Length: 309
Image 1 (cartoon, rainbow, N blue to C red):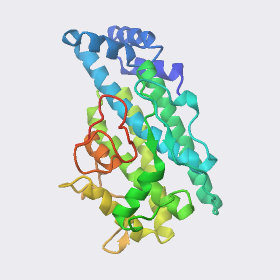
Image 2 (cartoon, one colour):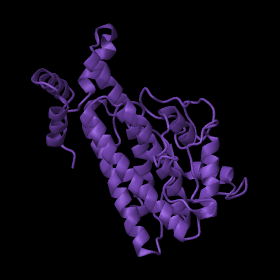
Image 3 (tube, one colour):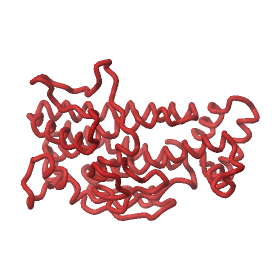
Image 4 (tube, helix red, strand yellow):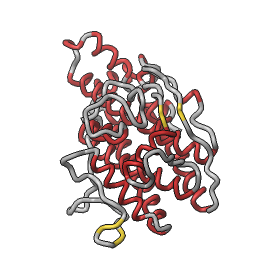
């Protein structure tokens, strides 16, 4: 879906003049039609010579690779739920240590509509992985080690959904699946919102905004289903547990506020919340402290942006 033609279109739109266009195309060609690889390698080898344009490219590559790590997690989670299998191998290799996925199996959906919603989200996340990998080219990071099995249990214990020593099987049924999806989706929205000001290339920003919109649709869908199926109390507990991972902030809202439905978490101006990359890593590493691994990523994420706040 996001092949060479789309990548070239991004380059052409991002260039403000013919010289910029030639420079971007040269870098893309050197990286196997990736958008950032050549500039990244050049600046890494000669940081004192890196131009402002190269610095911006490196920054965008770092952000896109950070997002790719998150998309790997979401794509694997939904892919297993719908098909019983994870991402194909050709979408998991790259720079950094490629890791396995622990846990994951097909959900025995009873509701036809929920299965269809899950299948669409799985397809979207698969396409997001493919897009970021196409945009990054040879600079794309590999899928890091992901622990689905134990991490959801840790979240469920922290939220009080189960007692210590019990296991929360996120794939056991539709209700558990929706609670697991709720853990991801709100964080994904805040992650893209927080990353947006850091992206310098307008076309990359446009693509990221498009993905943010899709993630917001996913989050609202999951929140609505949970509310309709009586899952508000559990969702509120998960939200509180997530909030505790970013101490001193108010970046999370439950499924009900003052007893009323709260499908769209936002501030008093109707604006979605934003987490910095470090704050996002606090959530996925399941720790309020500074860390470089843990939770869903037992060995950390790949790329240079890998430490929590």
